[in-house]
Image (cartoon, rainbow, N blue to C red; front, side, top):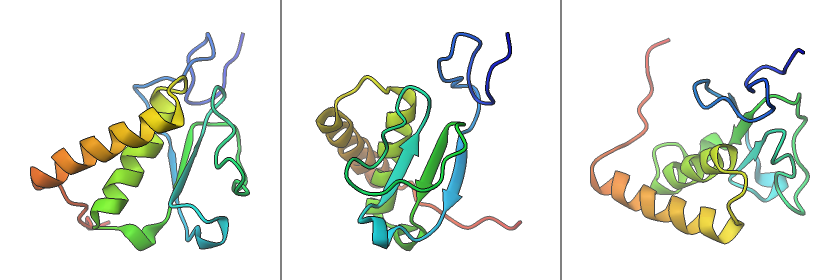
Length: 114
């Protein structure tokens, strides 16, 4: 039995692998970010989801780089991938809390040399 990239043989997300991360402006979608995987492919609710290949993917809007909102969005989308059973309200509250703590500890996104 073959399985898709980023998933275990039983179809669950392989948390040892990084999801594909796509950076692009998402203003037209009225979203800060999207996440999709086999168990949570309904990314975006009413907003149109970007093209998806089927592997675990996070789309993020680079407009929010270096901001606490950007950190919160990244955590929010990662939670959707790692815990697809969590309700949206729980994901939102958890991401907000974790971003607040991480921001207070001094975590920031910095550009690395390629």
